[in-house]
Length: 381
Image (cartoon, rainbow, N blue to C red):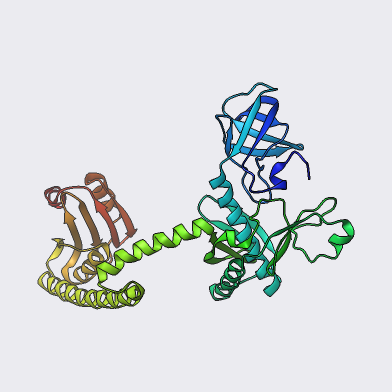
């Protein structure tokens, strides 16, 4: 541990006074090096700190060749005395996410032996890639155990063991480590080698919420949130659920049942509409029996309805059946069928003349046009 890396002495330290050792231009603006800093540089899956050097914004912090680089859009003269101040809300959010991820990964490793093979701390959610398969039911148990451990508000330990001490510690690590190793321990849930910033007590994480679990390569990818982000996410869901609750006249905890009932009613109505449409299509097909080529306009049909109507009519009229549905303002969907015929040249000409697009099989095509009914009728006449 470098004594000038003050963030490792105290992850809750937000400011310090420093002197500018070097300032040089870079692709990101300017790289400023201080004699000591509270700014944590990106590492261990955790983004670098943001904040200010006096009144100059620091937009990112990185480490290169053993130097901590503070990226700014304005220069500072070497020798300048500055007050370095991190964006604490940004840092604490990342600490909550990182610490919660450790506890979740640790419990999964203990229960199933799976390794955390990928970790990304995004602006919205954090993801963990695991080396084995889990279900949301499995993760619900993990979430419960981790939250119980969080609420015990146990102290988080940071250790720098000797090689002999390290050999006796059952810690997680993605690779073989040598030299000085920083060990972070969350009592009862995780012991892991990590260079990132963490809360000093588990209670500071607040809560963990696991959002999803999807198959990813040979394992799964888990999305989760911790602390303030988890609270905000659950608050947003609650606000949406209140709107649904009012709309369905259901109690907030009964909205799922109300939605299921509504879906059942909608499906029943769809079946009724389908049956009525089929009867209307059959009647129209009978009306046009053996008349040859026909052009038909029907109201309020979706593309599937247009197809079904055309299918019945083409098998009845004895020629080419063209069915359109829509309005002059929104355009028209079409289906054209001619059993045993070849519509390719005809449809190409139609699309060109009526600002349309579509295609299909030689004897049956579907598409849409952006023309008026009069223009469509004129083309067919």
